[in-house]
Length: 389
Figure (cartoon, rainbow, N blue to C red):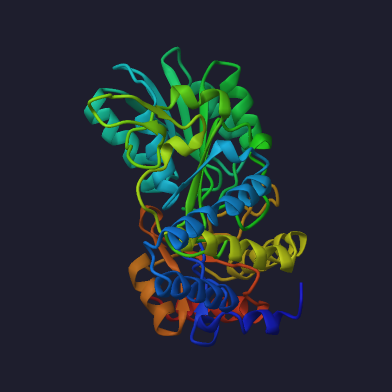
């Protein structure tokens, strides 16, 4: 990775505050922003509906799909572009056939993106959601998953890394456990892709959703869902239209055929320029180097947890073991409601994210953050601990 100060100049927000909230939205680097704006203006100035211009922009997403598929270790035919990770969860949730009483396993550390679709299906179709308690000890998590599976369990839907504490799950082991019992597996990769390289087949996932606007630093409105090739007939498109079919005739004929790939889950006019912009973000990250990115994220997160653990009254909720840790660090401070601590940090220019369910705050450290920023955030929290709420 090139000099960190040179890297930081690509992120203007870093001169305005101590930005420790990549887990919510990651700022796109300026070189990516400039290329994206230029592309959009080129599209508009040429007439977005001009037949040559329209088709060219749409086709420009094909190399991005191929590039993303290779990055994830899957085939391009197994990826559909979405607007976010939640879209991917919904595509799978509403695409599978369900019977009343079927069970879906979710964890006790899920974002609404992962649990709300299943709660809605429970209300609409009578399926059952079962909550599995996670642990920073992977053996306990696996034992809890095993106990939760019954003859009616159809699917496990977990985050690859949880949004509440950043716990990185032993997904390959969970997948093997589920598949041995005939249970399908879906992971949400919103908090993993971009922190480190993700090889979907190695996770054992049947379905995997992700977005480009967090750790991958792409434009807001970028995402994708992986649907394993041999399962695509079982995940029926719930929303269809122009673009989701390979053949369609007017109703008098009534003939139509979906694409024989994950393209069947895409439909209608899309903001193709931002998908191309996601490709620009991938270029930027590739040029920095993934081993360097992963090592820096790991180093900064470990330092932050060490600094937090040394503050009287702080309880670090996130795992410290390298296999379970990520760039997300959540903590509580005795005597401080999370809202008040969040505002205190914000007042001093440190941007965090509340975790209301745990009365905690979450700090995200990406490669563009520094040791000095970690120390600054820790010093503000230590001052708050000493002063009291």
